[in-house]
Amino acid sequence: MNIAVFVSGNGSNLQALIEAESRGDISPGKISLVVCDNPQAYALERAAKAGKKVFVLEAEKGKAREEYDRQVAERLEKEEIGGIVLAGFMRILSGEFIDRYKNRILNIHPSLLPKFKGARSIKDAFEAGTKETGVTVHFVTSELDAGPIILQEKVSVDEGETLETLKEKIHRIEHKVYPEVVKLFTRGKLKIQGDKVEIKE
Ligand code: GAR
Image (cartoon, rainbow, N blue to C red; front, side, top):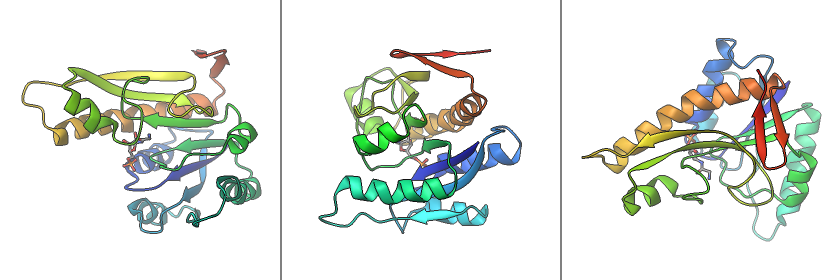
């Protein structure tokens, strides 16, 4: 299955997926395209180093979200993309795009959803003084940071924890779980039943 990984920034999750792919750990998934909305993203260097095709499309002021997404979809069709993996992609996708790729878009989020939605989840969790946070991988629906949850892994916030050490812990977990979920997805092991996801053995 041809996969497109969507990124906006550092791309450490992209890197983890690229490394998993090279070990054969996401097969039959194949990262066929990296989509990016930010020409300055370090993720683009990672993609280039791995020899991945990239599609960079910056948002233009005044351009409708649907129009941006249509341009992306056009490119995805050209590459015969079957699954979309959001890895730190900080744009909101239009309902039209999400419907087009219904049940084929995965997202990773650095909290135990539905807690700490949004773009600053690790910081928000840390500042709230929570003793436990984590990582969620879910299917994308038109509701932001919602959608059927595939997997969650907890991360404890320990005595003496700093925002930096918490970020590191969360990213370490992300880099482990995301390739695992992408593998299950590309092998057809994820079955959505209403709001729940069943993982088939
Ligand atoms: C990751 O922590 C991911 O969970 C988060 O952005 C980071 C991207 O890091 N995504 C969100 O907050 C989505 N709401 P990366 O560019 O190093 O993979």
